[in-house]
Image (tube, one colour):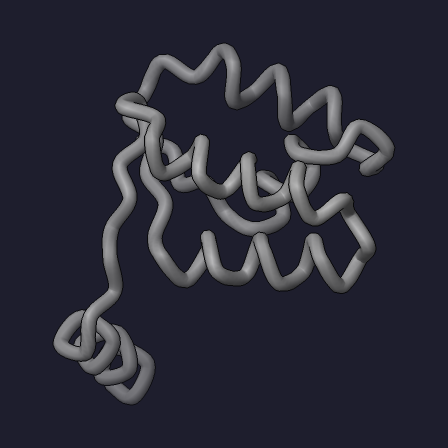
Length: 90
C-alpha cells in the first residue's frame, strides 16, 4: 500500500515544485494499492491555494483524485478521528 500524502500530492500537482519529477515517477509507476484520506485532500487544496497554485487546476486535481478508481479515499468520520486521537494519547 502507498499512502498519498500532502507533500507528495503537491509535488505531483505542480511542475515547478522541487520534487515534481520524482513524485510523478513514483505515483505513475506504483504497483501497490494507492490510498489517501479526506484530511489529506482538504489539506492539499488549502495549501495549494495558499501557495497560489491556479485554483481551477487545484480543484480539478482534487476531483480527479476522488474519481480515480485506482485510489482509495478513506473518509474520516468522528469515530475514526477519535480513534486516531486516542492512538496519540496512548
